[in-house]
Image 1: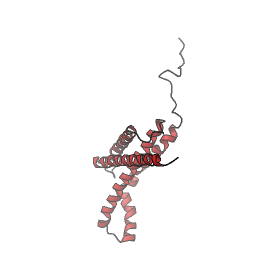
Image 2: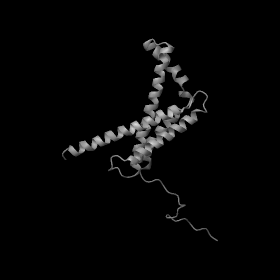
Image 3: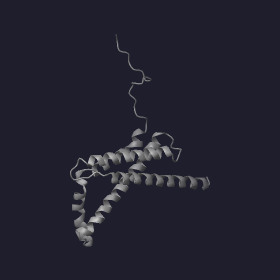
Image 4: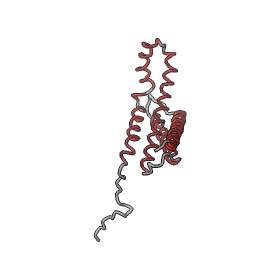
Length: 171
């Protein structure tokens, strides 16, 4: 019995990504790489504190006790910026993947971006539990997810504002 070659319509055929897939998803994938680097031992609190404290001490004359809360705020701000950015990039990727660029905003794109961001945050914190210099916490997952939701609110605001301005602008 000779094997039958697969046809393009067969469910087992290899599908190539649609044109524009890389353009749609490359920024999100690159940002995931940034998050992975930030999740490493190299950027743990101990290491960033060791690098930043001398600078803050030299510039502002801070003591270690004064620097500690500033360092904590800087690190949590990094979470908000990092995961908020991922949420915006994921929204862009989902939007571009649907080939409905004429639509400005979709609840499905926003929801998918938040779910993806929360999933990445969860995996990142779980990964950090295996690194001795890091601690993975549910609090960081909640902060990251809140940042993703806030970022989607910002995206909605900007895109709905653009639509209103376009309606009032004469062609």
